[in-house]
Length: 112
Image (cartoon, rainbow, N blue to C red):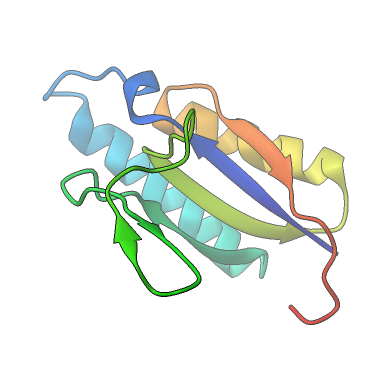
């Protein structure tokens, strides 16, 4: 089976304070459904209060990340038998979060 990254940037989720509890409950319900189905690997949100850094092979650290690099928002990783299944789950997450999701497949790595 393939692992899929389903994600959205934080600026895609445009909600009012009143909408947030319902969206949060809906999103958690989809995650619980994925867990019950045995396809959930992990997920979460990027803590945008913590600045990213670039760490080099010698252990040195730089506040300058790769040019064009940007990762924020939320993500879920699911392990699914087909891309069609991944699209269906991404649709469930999009409906719950009220914003479109990006879908990417992880390359197969026999060690993972």
